[in-house]
Length: 459
Ligand SMILES: Cc1cc2nc3c(=O)[nH]c(=O)nc-3n(C[C@H](O)[C@H](O)[C@H](O)COP(=O)(O)OP(=O)(O)OC[C@H]3O[C@@H](n4cnc5c(N)ncnc54)[C@H](O)[C@@H]3O)c2cc1C
Image 1 (cartoon, rainbow, N blue to C red):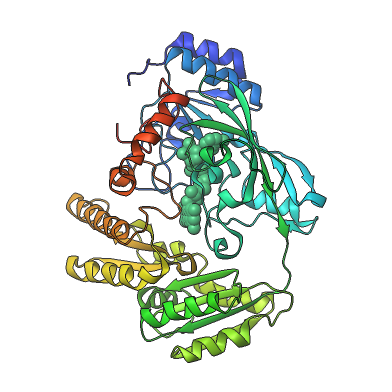
Image 2: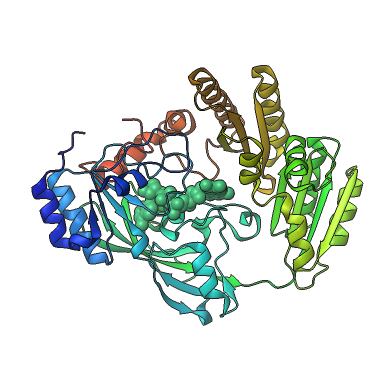
């Protein structure tokens, strides 16, 4: 694809749409939108626009399409695979001014929102209705960014990923047309499932200007169990038994012994430096799940078991998982972290963990393994020196080996961070001929390739 370089007359036309105060070519604004939270090379856009209405988004996209100018959407920029980096420059649409909670329909357990509201702000506003939107990617992401990346996280085992919690979207297509996909009905079997075509499409098929989300009752009863095990096999047996017994945990996480060591250093938690399972229950009583979970842990050879009942105690125990990224930053000042994100069938979890451990030992790298074990989703944060190109190349090659191994184990190159720039090279291995169908869809919906070019597919 070739794109038209932005000119002063393009800028004048864009000013007509959003006004001069919501358009910027200042280098501070361009630089702020040049990088996400990943190691991918930054690239500033040529102009940043802050739309406030669907009509403005439609007018901007329609103009850009006619002129062949790239348009990249931006939420909070917290992606980890370069997803919102405007690699071909052009227009960057920052959605943070479209941040309204439009309509809480508590009796339907639904809310209509604009895409720029963050999940923390949304949940703050929903709390007085006794409701919440469960997907939790850790970062204070926007709803638009979460829907576009189909993000998930700690609570996915109970509540599903973002895709399971979206009912309807308003989408601006590449030609500027505004369409509604999905509906407000909880069940819908009408026509093609366009809703889930746009969820996870990373702003490459259309731009989300409104969403109807599913809500759940805000839990107020909590319990938690943290248990250390002699090996990863016992960890996974515990995960399988917890789910198999129908205990319905609201989180089921894995930490390796290196992560336990890091948490001891940073937070003085006094953990046994061994693989751990950390789980949370938010049932109808503060004691829900604890007794059963404890006996499952004991039966699987746990060497140390800590339990918590009530929110305050639960929060203390969860220090072991919250802010892991920040703990690692504090322990390795000046170093960068490559965050591996793969997902495999749960039965293969021990194998992928062992593969990572073996690679780290062979290549003499330091990697902290943890993740959403209940979903088979493994992360490993590899510590490296950004100023050392050889080490950076080594870390990238190690990441590639892990991703390929996960695909060989019938898993995926990314459980939750999306394809972005970083996972494009694995798309053919994972999807085979289906990648051609994906291209066909992209070319049909965005024939001029203006929407977030350089993502999902290799150029
Ligand atoms: C410390 C840390 C921990 C994290 N942990 C997790 C985790 O556990 N699980 C997880 O899933 N993610 C995690 N992430 C990644 C990230 O937070 C999520 O992917 C998040 O959903 C990105 O949202 P955002 O608002 O920052 O979007 P951005 O990064 O700004 O954009 C994400 C993508 O969405 C597109 N986009 C944005 N708005 C729109 C719109 N209105 N219409 C169409 N496309 C749009 C962008 O073009 C881009 O492709 C983590 C990130 C950090 C920094």
